[in-house]
Image (cartoon, rainbow, N blue to C red; front, side, top):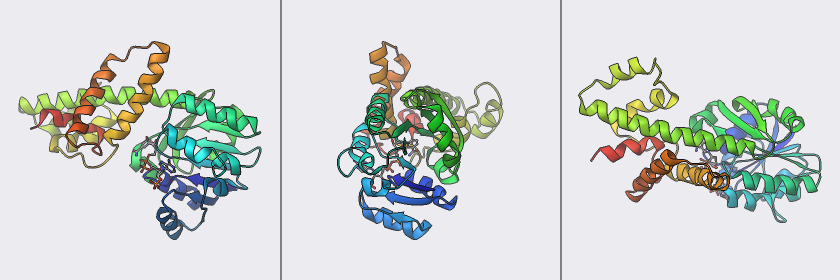
Length: 287
Ligand code: NAP
């Protein structure tokens, strides 16, 4: 099966690699050409000079770029994905973006006899590299059925959440929950340090109970050590929370705790932590 992958960033590069390794005929596109050349040298496959050319003759085109505007840039216009994608083919967007842009692109695709699924992911860089991502999708059952065995090349779990936009709405919930969990850990671990508890003994014990979480198990060592130079960047988190705030405003939903944590992330950006992992919330307690 011929497929294309647009956007070879931290996430897209290994995801496209998993598709090629799984036996699909992959054509990639990346704005910075050197990354496409590097990808081809590493995995084989092909690369194209525009998203439209990459999407030509493909049954499915995947995309993983930055934000709403970036998705529009690679999708629309004469060099965009939709210009090259054949009728009947499916466009799967893995970018974390708004539900609105998902609906806009689905409408555009459908008017040309093409299909669109929004499909943001969770699991981070490690999940992309190990092929262990979780994918939440919005769109029709028929297209989901067609693509689910393909995305299994890099996903340990995928689920259709509802109509177009529902994948992005589920990702908003994911990010709202993470903000609260990480702030809880930052406060708990800071308290533990100040009262003189041993971090290893503490986490070994409480991670088995009701306070246990992915963030606790995977981030406690670096949070206690004050290391944040890896992982899911604060800039990305604030982009994602801004999308959630926009949606919440439209539906008149209150997000008081998330708003507060977003303010803490802003403080971290102001001290230069733009690329730090989201667990850097604990740095506000360290001088
Ligand atoms: P990244 O490393 O910064 O890569 C972004 C990719 O998109 C690059 O290939 C970049 O091309 C391309 N791109 C951005 N804007 C573009 C534009 N206007 N036109 C063409 N290409 C453009 O980002 P990432 O970490 O892979 O994240 C990608 C998406 O996945 C984001 O929406 C992010 O929120 C989401 N996500 C990330 C993680 C994570 O842990 N990193 C986890 C879950 C979800 P260039 O190489 O030319 O810059």
